[in-house]
Image (cartoon, rainbow, N blue to C red):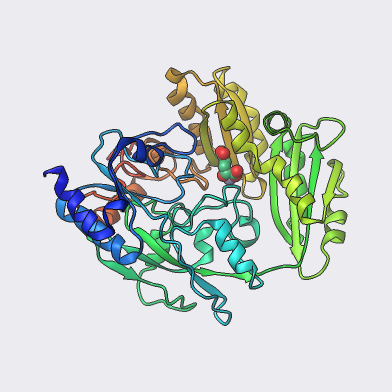
Length: 461
Ligand code: 2HG
Ligand code: ZN
């Protein structure tokens, strides 16, 4: 195919200003947020609405050109950037920012895939609602990417992952046809749950253009506490008590090493006079004052010190010790990032095994979402030749414990070859069948998820 034919077709759809071909303009779309995953695109196309997305996808389909949908490009597994060959088009959804009126009766709102989480939050809060999903990258993460990866974040303990907060989708299928499931019917059992299937499919089955989102009431009373503990075992014991609180909205953990790095890179002051091995960040929210019940819960034998905040600015200051980990690690180097779930009973054992598994080949920082056993293992200073060996050692340990090699960031390009550690051959075959049925030409995000997963994986468990 003559390269200009694609440029001509796409320019006719979105206007020449939104077809980016110059390497220096494409560059920011080709490297991910961590700087670890870089590819080369044929061009970047920036449609402005669903009809333009559909026409752009159809043009790529007709010409047999693969494409990678991209939102805020805040993903951490290389799923939003093109591969190295320069044959993929980046389809940026960032211009799809329209948000409809809140449907107060249905408790839902329809929003475009390019809307950032922070913009959505501001909008629904102004109408006394809240979106249940929240994450540290809220200012740049877009809904499309959150839906494509079934993002989890900080409030899963109360509201579930993104999938649980979506009532329907509009999406463009690989041949350019549009699937409209935006009615948001709470009861609708007529056939397969296509919305549920597309959420978490990482751009491999369809391009999500809009979503019908469920809203939750905005709770006026909110209290945040940072707790100092001696160990992760103690943190898990404390969780048993915290779970009893109806108002529990968030339970996160990090360690003394991570706290030190965050303070060093951000200039934040120490939260306590003396250092403690483990820190737990807890937030409660309710219609009535929840500070009393939280105070009672944290009068737990394992809690050494407590800092409590009620005012928003003070609460955000406490949350920053946990939320700024990603930024602090990035400022210290290009990390190997592993995002795993382990059964809670094994959380302390898993983290305790890391030094042995790493055998001096990395400087580890662990933090994450305590309530879900979701550990973000960030590894700095890993020699390039050891990256795969270190990754495999940690992911095998997770798999042996019955955990997941991808808790919330997705599989992307980074973890595709490890999918068989966590999904059985039967499951991988079923996923491949779905992929071939919807995208027989393998045009959507070809390197992601099933891309380099071995075709006949060896059973591992
Ligand atoms: C978080 O929980 C994000 O802060 C990012 O999922 C985790 O940087 C990471 O590894
Ligand atoms: Zn996380």
